[in-house]
Image (cartoon, rainbow, N blue to C red; front, side):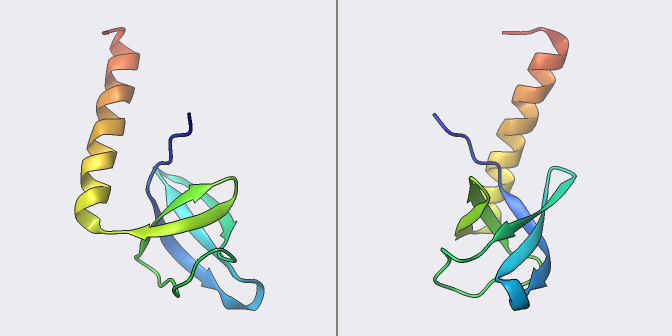
Length: 80
């Protein structure tokens, strides 16, 4: 199973078809070679093995990030 955390585009690098994304505070550069549409700063994407796979809307992002934060909080408190 693969879980993909929504990542926000913070820089666009058209010269090498990559973007820099912020994933819950961690920044990294990923390829946009598999994207059909152009990405802009502020867009949210899902990433798999270093490739931006698809753009997602803000409502889905907020729901997903809330669920991930709930998981992290439970792991930190030892709850099941």
